[in-house]
Amino acid sequence: MHTVLFPGGPLPLRIFEQRYIDMVRDAIKDESGIGICLISDGSEVGGAANIHPIGTLSKISYWHRRADGLLGITVTGEQRFRVLEKSVAGNQLMLAEVVLIPNESPSALESIYQPLVDRLRDIIEQLGHPFITLEKCYDDASWVGARLTELSHLPLSTKQQLQSLLQRTN
Image 1 (spheres, rainbow, N blue to C red):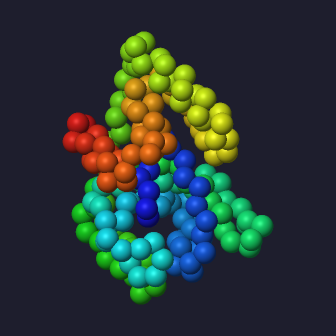
Image 2 (cartoon, rainbow, N blue to C red; image 1 turned 30 degrees about the horizontal axis):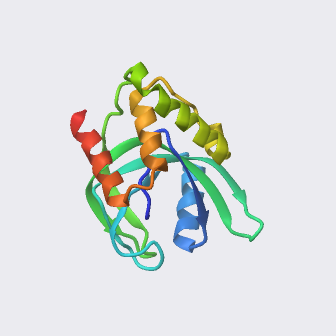
């Protein structure tokens, strides 16, 4: 995908390719997750793309049929992973063997950062769904940092570096 998702973050998606419809169907049926990885080379549409080795396991938290007839889902990031081995199915769906990276323990946010928390609250309220329905942890530095990173206009490569950096500190 052309996005970086952190644990605890929501990601609304519009599903239209058959390979992804099948993937979502299986994830709902099996109550399994979907891996979200930033594409390093290639496209979201058509053949399989190359991906960065650090991604986020997500769960489907909401799904519906959109007015345009397409499938709409919202996934929520749960836990980062490192790709050990990847393969491509016949339908061009990327499959991977991964190892999960432990989530960071909650860490207290120092009061000096309260203005950032206040700004984040305002942004989330303005964005509405799906952000407004998030489980919010405004007192956790990791959660606040992840949401600010996701919502920032930083280049995707920088967001990916931050996600990989967090993996190294655990």
